[in-house]
Figure 1 (tube, rainbow, N blue to C red):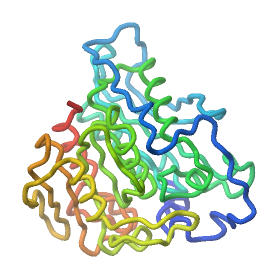
Figure 2: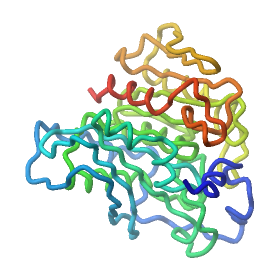
Figure 3: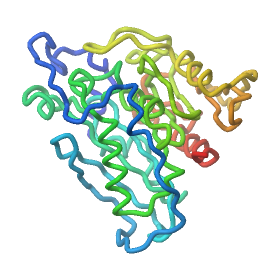
Figure 4: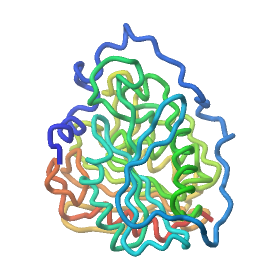
Length: 338
């Protein structure tokens, strides 16, 4: 694990001028193919799939690319042990934090190992950095356009939602995916972006599970109820649990409870909140009475927790009282897209 970049990903997202530089002397480019946040044209449910034929990819880890917006975009794919190329298989998209990479996200989450045990395909996309967006600047600044956060992707208005569309279309030509079981999660900036996918691609993404990232979309109107399982440390000094305005070049963001509450409201959750998990410093609470009932909006709070991935103690003291990756997968399993 490249600890230097992981430390960058976790320490003061965009708060260091050396990572972002001044935005005053940079002309914001118009990204080809960018859609307005409230444009629903790309939010189309793919056709159901009962089986696949003619696919030759076997279990393993692959680094693939796809062309989008005039750029070559990269992503890593882990095809699990026991994968059957004729059988539609769930897909979990996992987005890295600001300044990190797809390889580091794979190590941070342990999803590839879990995928082998549980039988799902996991995809680790790679965000763009300053040189790729502006032609100059610090390379260790890869990230996602989560609207409120972060870095060159957000500042430059990169069409990362369109990239995910292109990625999924390309993935369908290589492996047998289940269109009703495509899920998204992400860490920090990647968590912001997974919320954006819920807002703008509800017909493609069945459920989301952000870690240490908020709902940064100002006007989030999913075309259907999207279940959310949010993880956050109460002592996070990078993306504040209670919300903040500390992202250089970004926008103010709501608290973790408010992020979840807003989706709960969109999901019609009219029942009482119920505790669904408690161990040590980790507690999960879910809104209930949602429409449908499976469209729960849940928040897992790590009391005293830092900017970390629960279940990964080697990075920023992630708690061992809660395994975020495992809990996400269990959450996703029960919530295919209707």
